[in-house]
Image 1: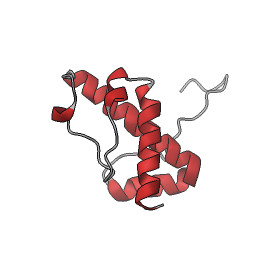
Image 2: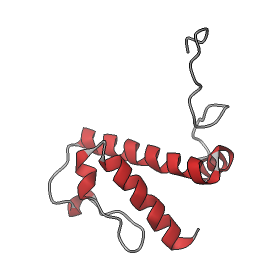
Image 3: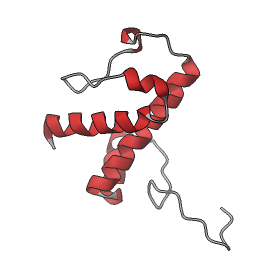
Length: 103
């Protein structure tokens, strides 16, 4: 995928996340593929908003990875990066509800 692909993927995830978390709209992916520190943002962001933004951005990024490379490979990559993270046995996607399934 390379640096350009990673940059494009992170930029797209950030754009999608910005639709849900307004302060993320001001964030731009740097040329080296990193995100600016919170000190670099124009306006201060509350800690709870920072947490929400991080969760939404990560969710969007993982969703894009699932769409492009599939759930199995995405789960393998996530487990390599976060070996102690507890993932559902079925992977990243929650099970669809049916009438008989109340979970």
